[in-house]
Length: 367
Image (cartoon, rainbow, N blue to C red; front, side, top):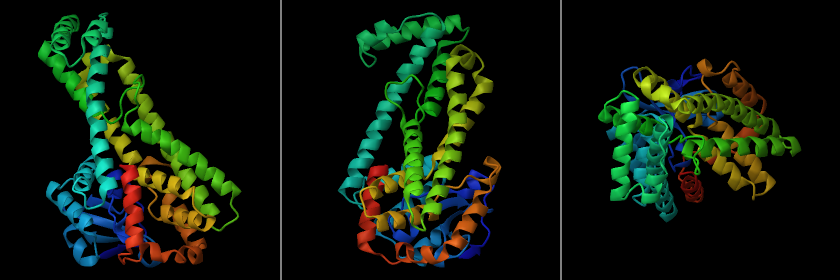
């Protein structure tokens, strides 16, 4: 274990991806690759100090007591050897479905996977509609026949063949481009979708978090109010970046014919944008759900929650934001050190089972 006193990551990869552990001291800690391409975990504010502690991934169970669920999740991530938000999400859902984080987590994971299946079908259909629209063909016959029906599939193949001819592409190439685009866009969806995809929903929830946290901080006289204001400011800065990325993607889809024709050059831009969106919103689901839960609790518990959210707040990397949020966070920590220490039990490292159960409940709702 080593300590990084002044931790201010420059990139998302350096910041790491949040992991939904249920062990209190490890909840929402971040995993990344070290300079030897080995996994390591970043643990913030042990003993209320500045910066983070860095622990080799394989040594995590030796350094901290962990729930059985967390040991399984740690092993799944180790075997997969990836640490992007999408990699971590897959491992988290896989671990949750085993039931070690409780039945609610199983239900939430199953619901999340069903949602992904629905979004996969929906985005494929919507992109086919966009293809046909781009070349002046109607898609109502396909919808009427049913996309998954034999007749619907026949009509789709027939219309897509005509579309490929109009675009001067081989049908197989057109299908390949649409399929690849669908894979990239699945967690984002398109602007006209009747059911927003996961990352658009998360962005919407982040907006609500910013508003409710701002209202709370403005109306609070506690020492946690400045921290709440800071949390809302970080959310706003993140939302600004999210809006830029989403607008870029929506504009690309709006010019769909150009997107298809220039896919060889546009592919990298689309993939980079969707990946960046995942990084921007990484870790916010837990924070949003935790704050929503706190709305029904006492003022003392709300203060406590604000301090905990501050510890795991997804600060934007230096390369992504002009404001130095890491420096602002250090100043807040220094000026509120006495208050922060009052909540040390939250991340004491001991397996407080009441707290584990609370984190499991939040985890289930944030899936």
